[in-house]
Image 1: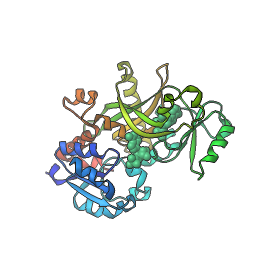
Image 2: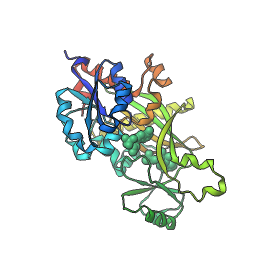
Image 3: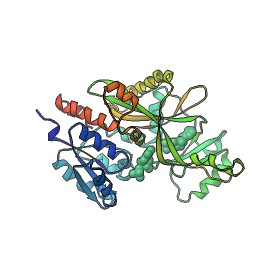
Length: 336
Ligand code: AMP
Ligand code: AMP
């Protein structure tokens, strides 16, 4: 019977790699970081990777695939992989891949995301199909995992055309109703092996310059173009009476994923929400893999500690799932 010693856990050196690799080590796996040469020293410094494979740029990722296959590596995807490795390369990967790879393409396409989340019965911000429809405060977002960079706010069509002109290169965008409330990022983990959804924790983001705007006088704030470049994350504990709704939302997302992209979503995922004063969750995005906000619980979140009776990060939870799958001869069920 195969065991953890027969496999390695591999990921790209960025985003949540420290957490993923540290968690894999905690569960007894050998670990591999595929790093850009100029980032490799970080992974050496923290000692989370038994092996570091260096590439000059992310474009070269496909060149190391055979090295990973030789080491029986299981690749863990995250946003940097999606942001920097072309979709075609991800689609054609031959290395063992944790999670349903096809669901990543649902994440990448905002139209598909919307179909998924609407079918799951979640509250979504309205979408304006054309700038002429803008009838309230709206946020203009660009496609791709670029971490909120360049997003902007508009009140009407005229302001939209003024601001889009400044963007320069024309990129695909979507216009969403801007929900005034507080952002809450919900970290879930669906275990195929245990057949159960878990809440791993919550974070809020620290975004530049949106989170800095309150630091200058109100009369000067209007001169600043607000945008949402992600810089870091804070941990968050949610009001406990909101947990039932949080669970129900996650369960519906998993159920619908099986209809739209069989066999569905599993492992870590995140609903990105804004909670309004009437305690409604508006879901503006789904991430169908580990989110970097889970890094705030690199050791554990209180919820994961209570559930597992020992410290458990999302990175470690992934490795635990893989270990249990290997030990039960069920690895195939969690690869995709
Ligand atoms: P990076 O490797 O840091 O350039 O990140 C690649 C992409 O991952 C970014 O464009 C973001 O979409 C996402 N990302 C990275 N770090 C974070 C974070 N701390 N919180 C949310 N998203 C992140
Ligand atoms: P996203 O790329 O969809 O994760 O959005 C980046 C950031 O923009 C989020 O972290 C929020 O701060 C903000 N944001 C996105 N959509 C909305 C929305 N509909 N209402 C309010 N804030 C939003």
